[in-house]
Structure formats: C-alpha cells, structure tokens
Length: 239
Image 1: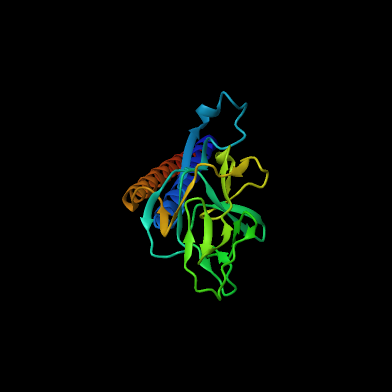
Image 2: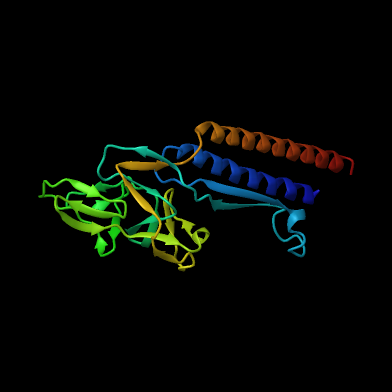
C-alpha cells in the first residue's frame, strides 16, 4: 500500500512540474528572447536498468531548454535587436556574466545600454555606452557594430556555444555558464537584425492545450490516490 502512495505521490509531483512548465511557456509567449522548456518524464521501469533499489521517485521529470530560432518581428526602436543564428548577447549582472537572446534593450540616464532588468549590455571592450549629448542617429549593423552619427561607439559581445545545452536558466530569459562547460566563443555565424525582436515560436493555444492535459493528468492521479486511501481504510476496518 505504501508503494501505491509512493507511486501516486511521485506522479503528482511530475504532473505539477509539467503544469508549471506549460504555464510559464504560455505566460511568456510574448516575451522577447524567451526559450521554451523541454520536459521529459521517465517511469521507474525506464530507470531500473540504471539504478538499484527504489531510493527515489517512481516517476521523474527532467527540465531542459529548447534553444530554437524564434519569430522575428519588426519593432520601431533603435535599441530593439533580434538575433538570427545560434548566438546570444552578453550581459553583466551583480552575480556575473549571463547570456540572453532578449534584445529588448533601453538606455539609462547615463547613456548605458541595459536590459529592462537594469543589467549592462556588454560590448567587446566592456559595457556599451551611448552619448546622451549627441544627436547622431543610432545605427547597428548585422555584425553588432554600433554607430552614433559618424562615430562607431562599440560592438556587441555576441557569443556562440560549443555545448549550448550546458547553459543553465537563471531567469526567464537569462542563462548562466558558471562552470564554463558551454564553452562560449565569439559569434561567427550570428546576424544582428536592428529594429526587430525575436519571439517564441508557436501560439498560446498549444500551451493552453498542454496546461489542460496536465490538469487532467493531475485529476487522474488524485482519483488514484482516493482509491488507494479508500482501500486502505476498508482493510484497516477489517482488521
């Protein structure tokens, strides 16, 4: 009977994880640079060849990231940038360098190019800074070189990764590589599209379907738990 509770409990945990992931993907369907989650589930039987005993959940779920090229949408903003290719922007945070495909940037009062979270966008020579006193037009070429008027003021630090799957999500659109396992290198094949933003592929409809499916699976697991509980109760009364 305890095995039954264990099985249902682990299934409920996996379904909740699945529901949480589906919800995030729906909520961020219109977030620039967002990369969807990839959730896989394995039963105990699948893991049996790899493990001895039953010292963990009977059902496990694994969360990864689906790195893919999103939809490119025009945006009338000189500091809106989309990436075509596998590269990422480099951003400085208080906890170190992170990477993102969210090119929805802004300029602060001091001219610093920043994410909407307030983090500095890095160029090859440090943080990018726009001259707030200049009236020159901002132009960003396809290699990430930024010009203001007739003067080039910086070049975006764009990177590509030998092992992109090693990146770890630190927020909705930021990814870290604390161990250097992803092996970032200067981007060679990524193109910057100025005055554009990248959005996730697909629609909210598919995400809603995934949420409904997860909710139904949760209800089924709850019903199984009630059956086990009722059976245990009858057995207890019978002595």
